[in-house]
Amino acid sequence: MKNNIPDNFVDLTVTSPPYDNLRTYKGFVFDYQSMLKELYRITKDGGVVVWVVNDATIKGSETLTSFKQAIYAKEECGFNVHDTMIYEKINYIPLTHNRYEQCFEYMFVFSKGKPKTFNPIMIDCKTKGNNTDKRTFYQTNKQDKPTIGHNNVCVKNQKQNKNIWELSTNSGYKGHPAPFPEQLAKDHILSWSNEGDIVFDPMCGSGTTCKEAYLLHRNFIGVDMSEEYINNICIPRLEQYGWNSINNISKQNSI
Image (cartoon, rainbow, N blue to C red; front, top):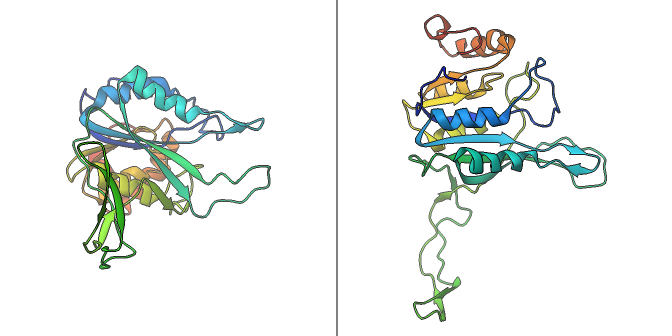
């Protein structure tokens, strides 16, 4: 990736780096420090990087690799940690050990300055249409004295989704050791970019980010160290939806 992409070029990156050597990726070693620095360089002002990561548990203790990466992105690269989101796995695999089951991953939303785009995912309100005149709220007035008020409005039909997303681990595609859900990529692409923007995945693996960007009418760049993933998984997957590799591929390890 280094120097192949111009400065201030990418609107949105959605990616999930390897962490703590929990899986092997064709023998390649991951250097998150160099990657985060490069991502800052190529990201436009107002652009966003969604970094999906988690921690291994070694000898009964979590490594905190995820937070080390987030702190490095902020302190050493210049990103803002715009949001710390959670991807909750609704169909996690139950194991037997002396703690509650691990069922989530972090989705750090790094921004280069203030995000220029936010199209929030909306969800239905459970009490939509209900009158809230019986709800009491407490607030502080200009004299810093608490006052009591009463709402008297109807609940809206929809509200912004929370920053914990409940998703199935079913990626919809097999052939890669750690694909993330298509819905995860889709919702982040919808949230942080617009049609015609450039979406990037520097570890595109099975091509989920590329596929969802293409279907959502974004331009995309996918890179992976494994030619096998690019040639045998990503490209055939995209071609199922009408993408033409002959006109778009520039190198064997990028699409």
